[in-house]
Image (cartoon, rainbow over all chains, first blue to last red; front, top):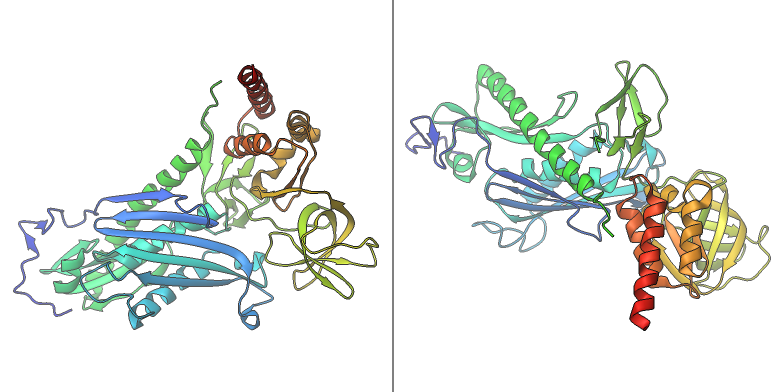
Length: 246
Length: 208
């Protein structure tokens, strides 16, 4: 995150891929893609391709970790070796993937009604097949859908998006280049109903006013993403009720 | 077909009314599971994990013989246990049983009673949220399946279904798949009867 001013990321109000400042990349969500998992989802978000499977509640292993009061939420985020230009996932978990597993887990620990399933664990597996910036936000968005598909009770849904700054302009949904060469990157996750912030990280610098504006833009964007999640789930469950023709 | 699909966090009702699978906040009731609002304005979840309750019927497989009883796999995070106090017949590993939940211990383990050993057959999984539809009102659906399937079927609330080897297993599986797909449609039993009748005719023609 150099904040390199010489890199032109925005020209005439348009970004490198032709988007306007608050425009999202193309998002497609599919539900129930893995029959073996209790719940699953696949998301294509610009150049990101992420598959997410949920198992559980199931027996907690190792047993001494189990809580008699609530279910444990475990998350494993991993990037496939071919996902990106950098080295990823070739030799087990990295510092980065451990961090992402943690932040994703914490988002869902705040949403899942874990008290309903004591002595168990709920596993969220996120596999990034192709990466193009913003995988943690896309992972959270996909995992929320997978958890709904798994029938795990949650207080509400969650959608995430990254906001940031490039060429002194606040932008929404940063792509890989904007992430690497922009001035700042701030992934945010908003819950669907309460609009609670469940994830907030920041790289680079933003002023207080910029953060306020960025959060507002992120909230608008997550509302749009929430609609896409709703559409995907609704479509999945309505098509399952197709007519039987004799 | 104006059934509204409901997602976690969607408002279902106002005021403190008790609805299963919801939570109460800001004087509103919110859903926790994906479901829909049916014609009687009731909230029906589509996806749901089975939570055992005392008195319910479950189907399971014996996985271990211990000195005081048997462990049973019930497709749940916790194990079932049959105490020899309530079961005098000898069970073998892999035996399929149907039983009633006697009590649930604090660690989640489930004690079973009224155990009946099931003869040879096939054990299949069925989404537990849709088990009520597979049984039907006053067993209407399961009776139809037994009648046309030509053999016994036992449905556990835990989502395990046992089908007798004497029955037409592929046909029953097909019917179960249909129930699963169309679980929340009207006239489901009639649809399944129509399906069986159609199959019957087709088979008769095929044999000719």
